[in-house]
Length: 302
Image (cartoon, rainbow, N blue to C red; front, side):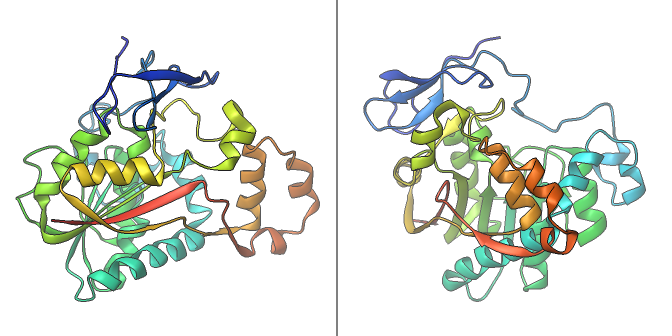
């Protein structure tokens, strides 16, 4: 099945071929009107989550908080790899929450859309927020409930899932690049926010010099990435949906030396021999690192 798209930022149909990465689900084009970059047409949907939870006949597991239910699931090795960076991921969550709390010092209800293993929600809970997650993958949702004690619904965010004006803050971190219709997602989010509520969206930044240098070899171009934002195009989309941008920043990540070397490998920089030569104590040490290829926009509902 092939999906033909139009620019969700300005609504124009004026795309020009940008790149044709070998591992992309289709050709990557750029809108000549606003600069939004997206896959069009999408020639393969096999790696994309479109609507509803990703299930394999499970009923019990959709609400389980028993970590034993993770054993043998296909997500188990993915979760284990993700959690190798648990400490740094928690530190990154604290950084986001510190920024949000500048605008919402009284805390309140916070929704994480695509919460995966619930690391962000666990940190938010410890800081006095009332957390809620939505996650289409069953295994990570089990881990989030069982480890952090946070409520997670196995689903995608759809109309009717929550009552209007239920949340003070909604976050979506590394989610919008996977969406065929990110504009529809914002339409679903806005009614759920209280007046003056905050929306925080983190995405890979397509307007980075690294993309210009590495071109189709850049890590942004993978099978499940179909929408590529810059600070300008994401801000424009949010403003068109009734939000006012309060802050734009490029996160500097906390990560282990081990993960940094892995990241360099994703940039096609030979790193395996370096990792093998370093002692474990050094590989597990945390460092701060950022090259501007991630952008976060915080906006307020008007």
